Length: 326
Image (cartoon, rainbow, N blue to C red; front, side):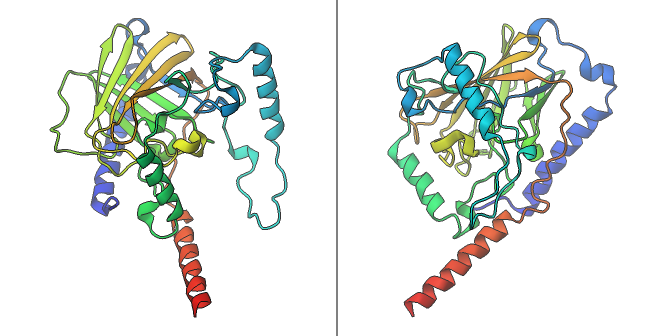
């Protein structure tokens, strides 16, 4: 599985940088002028939550939590957000200051972000799990088995909209003919044409697919096709067993952004990939307006020692295994 070449990365980042630079150069009034009605999606939005991606086994058959259960879950979550000394042999991780995984369940009180099928579970094919598990087992063998997030390529579409442990912010800007979503994580700018143009030719395959948007009433509908087969449908550990499930060229994603009130966008994504799922499935995640939130550059590749360290560890393990055989 090849990664991006240096020239491809340069083109990608230059295009995003130029677009966002032009946007930044626009008069502030032009950037903040509301779109008519509730078609105005502009602003900075966040989506951290303690609601699990899939419904836990102990909540099987239960679609919604009671108010009492919500309070209990949120109380337990608060108790876990405490810095503790790492156990012996554990090098530790970030302290709680750096995490932003949320403190509350979603307002709907759903037991999972996956809302279809009704059991709240992603309908995986065995071959999807087999490929995920194979890559995980060979993670230290080569970069090609690693997460595309760890490799600083992308979090994916729609994976970039799934809550993670930190950097759960999105800046949405609307200009004539386009909606732009600036992701805090990996600092990507997704440019979505809404001028009625068709999708790119089917032979053109992209990491994040080819997105085209249109309005259905006050809902922005974004249709994405033309994926390559190199990415993952989910890249964050917060998605549990779905992290590492691959995408194929048959992946088709339909997202819906609906401004339901002054401070909330209902985000929905329907994912269909017959190569890895037995049927389409759907997630629903609220985006909450946070005008005081500041997005800073997430310079993913700069100082990224993780890939090098993992591969070095793998080579050390190989030498030790070879020495044991001798």
